Image (cartoon, rainbow, N blue to C red; front, side, top):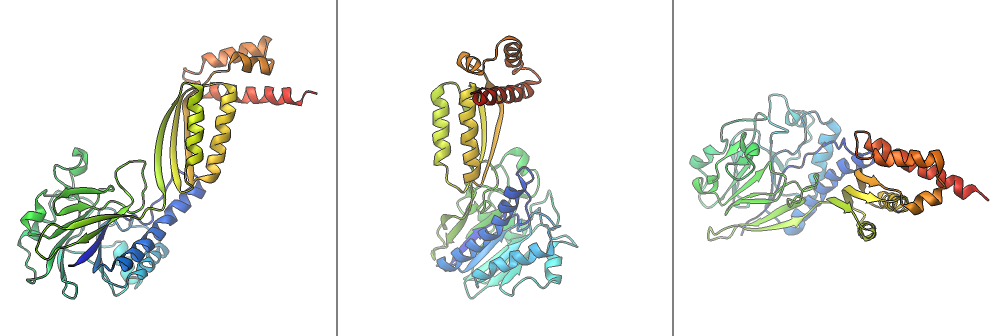
Length: 372
């Protein structure tokens, strides 16, 4: 029975502006190594073809070097690759694809389909019906022609498209590049391989989104997989097996510190994080000065161990305890300043007040520690 590997939304050349330069460069480069892993998986699983359902590149303006690196990453699987443009890399008159051809960067075993067409691969028993995007957005269902497309009898009909299945995704997501929800049934497809939705999602008995193979957002939507698809000989439903491919695991934590034990639990969770984690951490609640020192130490250790840690402490209120104030020997005017800063934490200058409390407490603590 024929087996294909379905993937999409590689977004090669994607930039990560919200991250520190060191992390941004590593995350961008990880997308190339992920493609190499996909090629190795395709060879190991002995698939008959790899189908890439659009948005291979993140933008038309990627460098020539990026184009060459992408196609070099495909060398690990010598069988046929079938690629179509998506909305990020649409097949415009002048596009990343036309540059790739001028560079002679596309290997012979890679088929880039820039116009609606059928690619028959009789040696592996497949007929690929492709609906590439030739502009970034369209209001017309580009897969409509699948219904009347003729293919050689005996070949499995596989649709390859990039867009939004109508009625399946959020309303804002399916207003452009529409795809009929029953396209696979109307067009007598054995399987419809889709891109555009970055999470793993089944859109019908024979219709799937593979999602992006390298996680890139703090969403629990199944991103970071490719799909191995086996096509049974009796025209039965495809057997779809997700396989993980993501190098980094993206997580978002929303943590409230209300009790002393809450900080203990957060520090324990941070210690257990694997090194390939990209963590977005938002902390609210309140802590005293001693707890703030413990928290900053834990965050510093985690930043050195994980791929990336971004901590939002804007909603965390620093509340010095009586013991903190006593230990700092902040009586008189300094005591009044600390009281005033505490009261300003919930106002428009709250972050400034929190920062000032931290700086003042550290200065006083250092002064106390320096005394003989």
